[in-house]
Image (cartoon, rainbow over all chains, first blue to last red):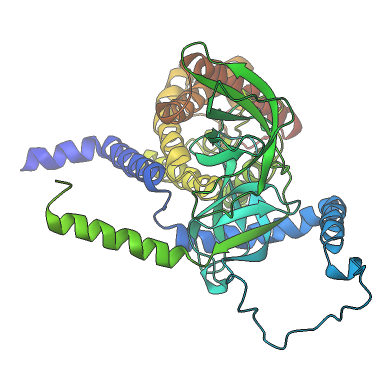
Length: 291
Length: 177
């Protein structure tokens, strides 16, 4: 017994070192799997306070560019207003329906909220943003995030009370299903960790005629993003000799290294779809597997 | 200013420098990962207990981690640097006297060549371990090696610049020397 205490005393620093290593590696690998960090709630409160301070300073220098971008976006929306169009037939009369919601049309599925980016890393292989909206204003995990010019930015991975974290497209763990607008074929968008202005699109078959400058939009089968939203443009087409697929280099539409205002989009049908999913899973489990 | 206050201010300044300057600026090249925050551990006083250095290294790494959103990554590297620091200081301890006449490791206290070797070894260890942990989950081996070499060079450059801009002359109040 005495010897054990002597041993612990002698190697106390080394034992402490081992404990700290195990703790930090456990944090790291459990976070890499799930993106839910332990203790982030407490630490997030402190870091986001400083991030907000830093952000007000940063805004002083960069807000002008952002204003210009938002103005352009507004401009394009203004052009869509019905008041821009006149009815050629002067005999028709325009009615305004007194119902709040047009029951003849489909119900709303996506709801957009604006948010401010308070912190963003640019140089690492795993880039994240922090935005100033959290669960208190209706943000949940897996919501899509778009830039102020309408380009895809990423996905919410962790929600705090007033802040949440967004995994940027510039994150090597990001895999997003997108499609070519012209041909409609779907592929997987990822990032190789190198240049921030170059994403990689795989799984587009070689039979597709892809040209430089083709538009890439979000795919149909996602719960996070509305379909058909701008992602980027093809900047290079390479043929993979080993398979039947092309490797496309994509230039993202959003300026991912310089984001200030973003839109968070909520899929209102998300809960229903999830529920359906888990019910199906339960039914399969009850039958005892897929026999 | 007491050592405690000085080191608390340093801690905050190093975290902010790393998080709000080096991490948010667009990097010159994809292989360039500038890290300077661990200089805080290198600058801790000689007389500090090993266990405390270790705890501070871990805490420093963890506070960087919560900004960079990589829980545990910098904490692991920071505690490794803090653990190895006493051994490397012992390598360069002057043979004739048992104590340093200066409080902290600095070019004045150890001599430029010994100090640079001390900084080089620890910054290599830091970058190697940090990038190794990153490489485990993503990246190619060549990329990893290049990053370690370039990152260490950048860290050393920044350490030398920091030493030249902020020369520290902290002597013990004693009659030796």
